[in-house]
Structures are given as structure tokens and as C-alpha cells.
Image (cartoon, rainbow, N blue to C red; front, side, top):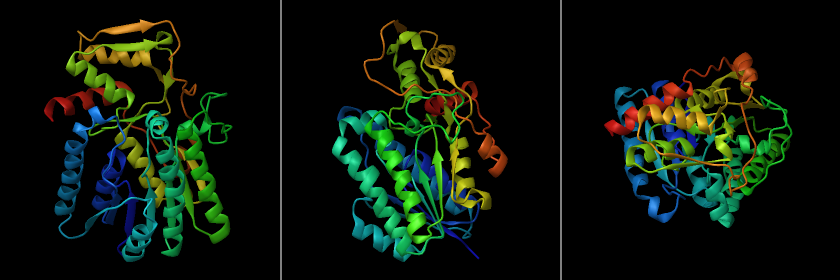
Length: 331
């Protein structure tokens, strides 16, 4: 029997590639997306271009399926509970993957009230609509920022969760709501905690996108604290594979998984990789701490996803960065 997935944020950076993955696997896909960005107004111009690329990639996959899979885009906000309920009821998806959010910590600070509305109330709206529509599995995109400062390395899924800012807190609240809907209504769930996802069509100004754009535009990079901050940079296609396994693997149900590369690199290492592609890139080292307080992070342990789901990150940072630069040069 043909299956259907509804992806909130389905025209987004991760969601659009996940839609392609499902279509190529024979699933019908409904993307529910507000088609809105929360980067600063003067930096929004690339967003529309990247959305067009994402949707074209999805439509190409649909055409290549020769009728085996169908795609539908619904322009809608998850804060619009009525439209969301109707869309979910009409679509009757077997699985919901909830990616829609203000997905950047800095933007969540800038748009504090909207971050709470979208990341918390929006999440409960999606949960409610999924429950009423009889959805079989709910996959929730959380974040490594839910852990706050890492106290053991690599961080396993049982690491303490003490977020430091509204983004991590809102994502952790979403996890609580997801588990509550399971306890109250029996809605099966999977929680995914990604970290520092990067790659083609990113338009949210994550750190790797910033480094690539600085290199291409001849702008300098500033590293605070000597660039010693550690992040688990995750190639977007690896993240997509993890979300797909979370949505489809029988062993994933009612559990939580780190979906990352499983390896940490400093920002100084990232800058060194960038300079191999952009030899004239100016990197300014600041001994002072980053003026923006960010969680102290490192590698996440992906052993549980490996053992239970067969998840295997395949693209490490140097290769992924090179592929991202190649995409940007060709775009």
C-alpha cells in the first residue's frame, strides 16, 4: 500500500531534501510550509532563489518517479491551527515529520515572541492535528542545543538537558509535548537531535554558509576565543538519511536519537578548511570570548542510531565543505 508523509517545513533546507528522499522511495509527499525566513531583512534576498531551487529539485524527483509518487505543496503557517487541521485531515498522512521552526538560535533571540509561538505553540498545533488525523508516527526535529553546555563528550541521548537560550528551551519544550501526546493519546513518536547541519541551498546563515560566503565575497572571518569552539558539523544529506530512518525504521519508535556526523571540529579547523578553497580569506583571531553566549558543545554520540537504525554518516567536514563550495560556484 502506498504511504504518505506530511513534512512541516517541507520546502526548507532539510525538509526539501527529505521530500526528495521520500519521493524516490515511492511515498506521496505533502509539504506544509509558510515560505518565510527569519534572517535579518538585508540578508533575505537569497532565500527566494534557494526555495525555487529546492522546489525544482522536488518536482524533478516527482517527474522521475513516473507517477509512483505525488507531491503537494501547501503554503501555511503552523500557527494557523485551523488550516493545519484541515490540511492534515485532507492529506491523511501515515507519518508526520515536523521540521517547521525558527531554526536558528540567534534568530530566536531576535524574534523572541515568534520563536515561542512557532516552536512551542506551533508544535502543539502540529501534534494536535496529527492526533486528530490518526497519524501513525510523529517525527520531531529537536536540537543539540537542548543539552545546553556539554558536560560529557561525546554527548549521548541521556545527557542532561539544560538549555541556555530560548531556541534550545523551545526545542526541549517540544520534546516534552511530543512525549506527553504519546502518553495521553498513544501517538507514536521519534525525537531527532541534529547539530550544525550544512550544505547546498542553506539560507539561514549557519556558520558554514557564512564561511563559504565570506570566502566567495572576500569578507573577513572573525574567530573568538582563538576559534576553539567545537561543533559537530553534519552534512545535510546525512541528516536527511537520519530523519528518513526515524520516519520508517521499526526500531525507531518512541525513542530519541542524535543524528550528526559524530565528530567535532573547532571553528579554527573550519577556517583552515575554508582557506584551502579561498587562499586569500582573511581570518582574524580574537582572544576575547564570543560576545554572544552559546552552549559549549562538541561531538554527539551517534552509536545508538548506528546500532538500532543502521544510521551511518558518510560525509565528513572537509569533503562536505568542498561539495558545498562546488555547488555555490555552479549555482
